[in-house]
Length: 443
Image (cartoon, rainbow, N blue to C red; front, side, top):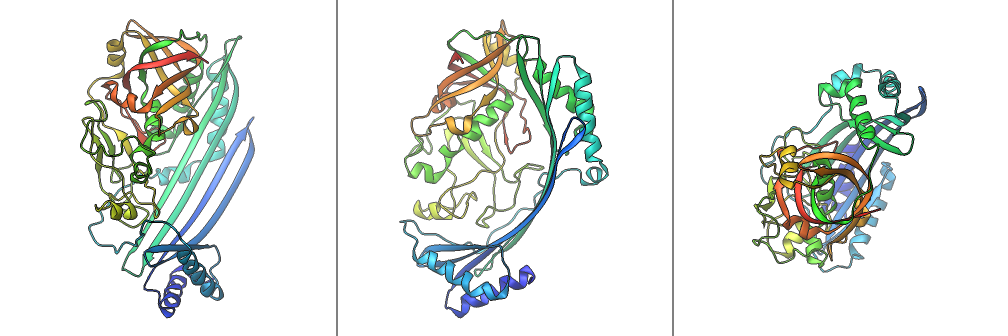
């Protein structure tokens, strides 16, 4: 197989020979390893490697692409022909662009596991110890559902005829313990995962404690009394919420009337307590990157600042349509992407939020958010889990219940924002947030 750099050179030469002025190659490769144990034995162990290249050409403002996993020289004419043909057949009103690489690219430090320590870790023994300790930690643990390890390495190269020449590498590693516990009458589940970027991530006792606590704290649960009430969304739950609604800040979604925020730049759309940030440059962030999927330099931005909508997220095509600059959130198409996306923390801890709420509920899980959000109407009905809060203190666990709300009203009805910002194995983060006027009902 030809070396990838030489292969790209020959693709570019073929495009030039055909009189194509603008062209681009994006090469990606990845390696992954998965390990899962069950009852102290390896239940699954697999490794994989993949690589592929997307060659694109721009003709008359339209971009055509062709993807190939074959890098034989004889296939080069076919790849160029197919890309050109796809450009000719593309039908839409928007124009598309390649980026020329101008501007300053920041030096970034993305998340990376502790590779030196991880290299010395016996993964099988680590998982076996997690499983064994989970059963020993509490007599109420009835079943270790899954104990697993996953790692992945990826590399990306972007080059085009306008002078763009970029590359980036990323490595991730993750382990998780998921289990169930019983009080003799009901069974509840819980778990905990780590990304091996902190010393405590290598401590099996810490992982077991967090996973077991998550499950057993849900035992002896009560049924909820239906009604409209204030809710404290735990940091991890509100991070899931903002990730699920992120599309409403996409310029294309607004342009397509799929976001009710269309036309509201510079207007209040949320509580003054809310500042919502997208920061590709965040030190150690899980989605930290120097450039977006179009090669545009990435930059920090406040999407909402003190309740006021400041910007949508633009790639090159939608930026051209609206006569503005890309925000560095391009995907290569009409959609936009987010990086490290989070709610700016306030100054009150979670216990203070409970005290201010008085009585209500704390939601720490939202289940099925990905299919529950209607961004046009804003209506949301989703299964949830959590705890009662009585007299400003966390009380009994609750059996699964349903919350119903409107996502745009949730943003407006934020009363307080906590100081416990976290990114739990995710590039979406949030502190705990107190929201008024949420309708809850028994599942």
